[in-house]
Image (tube, rainbow, N blue to C red; front, top):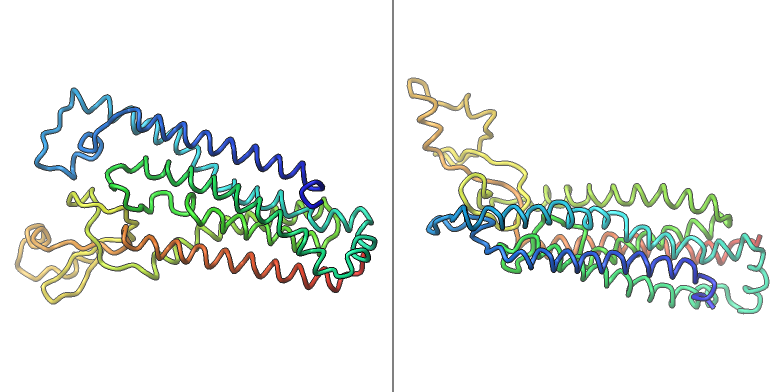
Length: 314
């Protein structure tokens, strides 16, 4: 019954996710089809390999054009896809019954509002998880294809746009829309308010990543544009390491130059360290992403049960 009532929303989500999955797999195949060896894409990682410009330049250009234009478009869409799927499946699940005036009847026939709501929730939640799992896997494959020099190690380049976090974000949006619908009982206000709150949810995901990186930052290898090392990281700054062990930013290093020495020569001999996170830290971010968005969704689901239990049926 829940699926039949929600058939328009369910099929809309199926078509949306199918479009994303098929596009992601096609773009992944196009990236693989370029056949660019890693040394052509990131020659700085292989200082002992002679860069063959005649062979590598066309491959390099083709690979990064597809990665930038086509894969970038898919990943940009993933900012919205889990939120849209969650909203579509959640806004009308309870709100439509209240707005249509059928809530008193179905609640009376069910005998328990909680049992009625649980019966509605389970099949839709299964559909939500299955659909977003397909999107998460397809975009995970695409994200890995964009950074073949990582050799299957995770990268923070597209963090939050692929993998298990996609399902958690969709679940959070679903719980939010469900609770708003149960509280409002009117579809149009529910859609507008849920969309606005989901926008803040998406923005919050961006700040969550930045906050997590700053909280978990540590000394890492200086990224590739400094010394040729890179490990899928997200760095937040680089510092000069002074002989006494202290770290000084590039802005403040001038004030630390000893008197009577050549500033440029003195600074040039100082080692440079970077602060941030890298590939081995990625599982920690995924766990945090799932925990935060999953808890957010669970709170709104619990609130929905409370609202439905106490709500007057009109």
